[in-house]
Length: 185
Length: 160
Image 1 (cartoon, each protein chain N blue to C red):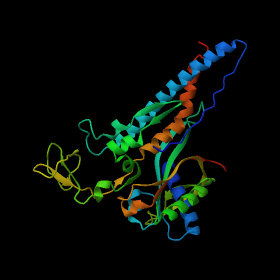
Image 2 (image 1 turned 30 degrees about the vertical axis):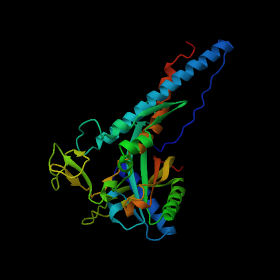
Image 3 (image 1 turned 90 degrees about the vertical axis):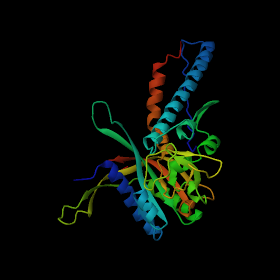
């Protein structure tokens, strides 16, 4: 996902209280705390992102698949943390981009549309709304209908909103977290 | 009655961009809503206020320090035009520009007309995003040459 990379400079001040060996230990401890902090922050950011998506939901969520929020995961890396993997999202929730930016969803350009059913096997109702859609494979048969969405959807900007939240909450988060730690212990 | 800050920020940015864009290019439509962006003829620039974060300005006051997330969507006729417009817009929002308080006209029968009063500056504090939107070859023609810019802005009472 597009996101700006942030670099942090952490200053360790050596005072007469600490011998060099203690300082080394202190840096190791601090590194672990910072990595934990990064993961905590990434989890909060991910939750914020999912919150934004869910607040704009039009149709009820059913089942465990086909839910974008489920596929936005936190990936702890060496010295950094990633949120959402483009390859995973493209494979499991390919609409993630159009939901963020807004526009015509790719299904509207497929010749007949896609196969599936509304609710628990209902026929699509013109002007109907609020029912969930279940995709199916295996061809057209009784109880399975073609759907071709024709209206563009409005982008909900969940990525930018999460990034914006990060920008405004980053300093308070670290201030709060670092001030509560006693690095010497 | 004056419009409140969110609305005034959005309209101030749109007003600023409309003036600047139409002095350098021709027939650029600057709009405020996504629905208008779909209906207007391209090139279209759509200014939207997506979100606001607030904190107390300082200890002991109840004044808020508001920060707004603004997205500027460009619907161009070609990839080159989208890139030119994006660079132009970034160049025009990086400096402070006028913030207006908008209100409905008090004149009877003229309620739709807006009055504007300068009331400080809009300052861009961070550029969050500047990239083309690529939905691939299957995308609708309107979505083919899109570009988006996201910025974080604040209103300052005085000159920057």
